Length: 296
Ligand SMILES: CC(C)(COP(=O)(O)OP(=O)(O)OC[C@H]1O[C@@H](n2cnc3c(N)ncnc32)[C@H](O)[C@@H]1OP(=O)(O)O)[C@@H](O)C(=O)NCCC(=O)NCCSC(=O)C[C@H](O)C(=O)O
Ligand SMILES: [Mg+2]
Image 1 (cartoon, rainbow, N blue to C red):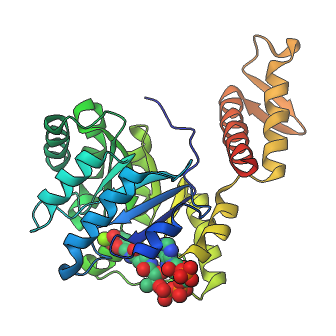
Image 2: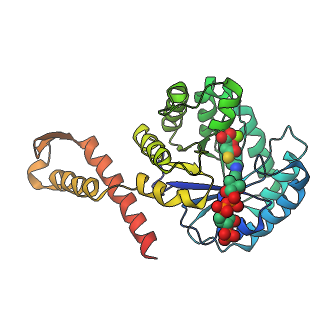
Image 3: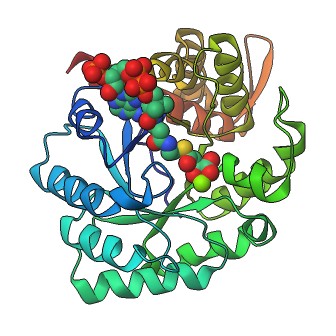
């Protein structure tokens, strides 16, 4: 089970119908961009959005940003045409909304194989239905079948709030069991996972609090709805200088000749085991990738 070392701190949605936003996506400092054909696009703009998104993906120019295309569900009037267009454009990721059953992913995988879409195009699932919360592990287990191409989850907390009637509260107590169930199911299968969006665009403090909360819960990053959210989100999900320094200290302690054959050490008054050295190597690697990206 390979866990990805690619930073996926900031994952910005934009409506596929908004040509200006699609253009801006090539310059914004988000790690990933989601070109949306689903809920950000009104029914009468679905066709133009599909054409614009397909053209944007084919044109490229997104640099190191990972490009996601969120299609409409296959049970909608637009889903089949969206999937066919995305299969041809071959973005990094096809994001499938409202997945409730692993069978949904097997169907998508089979359609991508039939279309000859390169294997580099992966599939991520939106986790946003009550049924998906109850089947999170079965959905994540679909990653064992390489034909599904499943590589990650995105929490859809707006749809979850709608369908469960859970209230938005600071700290998100009503949603925590679902967030953590999806997180554990993702990690059990080596998947990355991004938190849901924060709708209150002008509530900077609340947004920062929720980014920190998502990071502390174990998410790789957070989905975003406005460019102003990228900077604080990247900051929250980047390892701090102190974390990187401590990680280097732990790695050095285990690399020292006197540590050979030892499973546990005392470093600066703390017990550390080889699993901590493994965690430390991940922190240093992610920090190095972020630093290289920022210098580019
Ligand atoms: C929320 C918005 C509609 C606000 O738009 P607007 O009022 O135009 O914002 P600004 O005037 O502040 O915009 C300033 C400039 O930034 C560009 N911009 C704005 N938003 C984006 C964006 N998301 N990506 C790229 N660029 C963006 C504007 O074009 C302005 O540019 P300039 O002309 O140079 O000044 C808008 O932000 C928006 O549409 N956001 C995304 C909404 C969306 O995608 N929603 C769907 C995802 S949420 C969801 O469904 C999650 C999940 O499924 C669930 O269930 O939870
Ligand atoms: Mg949704």
